[in-house]
Length: 180
Image 1 (cartoon, rainbow, N blue to C red):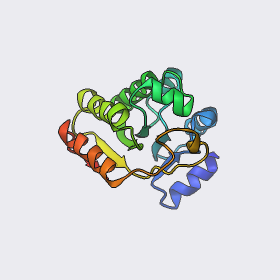
Image 2 (tube, rainbow, N blue to C red):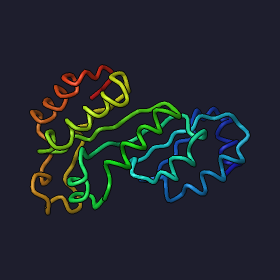
Image 3 (cartoon, rainbow, N blue to C red):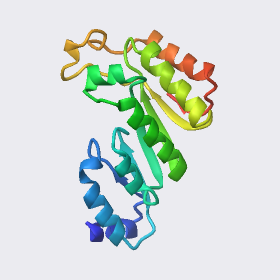
């Protein structure tokens, strides 16, 4: 993989974007590859932000851009919808690491019927803890797939009114650097 990275860099590749749905399961390979790459190439950690503190520490000094998701504004929604215990603690910690050790871009997926319980707490926390100028992509792309039909409120797409409300929340909490 190292030679592939070197070849891409010589062909004007601008960054190494670690994805895969969630790159954490392949962290050992990314760490090995990055330790062998001799080119100065920007690294992007493209993640759902639900990973361990050990992972966050291992990434310190290796990642230039943290492209992190922030979906749930509380543990109850995260556990009920995604079976993600202690989501809030993991996600907030990893966003703080991202801000401290690299550039941070946050993707906030607005969910139907979740502005009060999720979108507002997320955007308030961002403004209070990461600053009002942090880059945010406020996303309206939610699609009810997989087991969404089993969850009240998530059986449908987001309405224009719900997304407009989310945009207003971002403005109300003072966020100034977000796109939709």
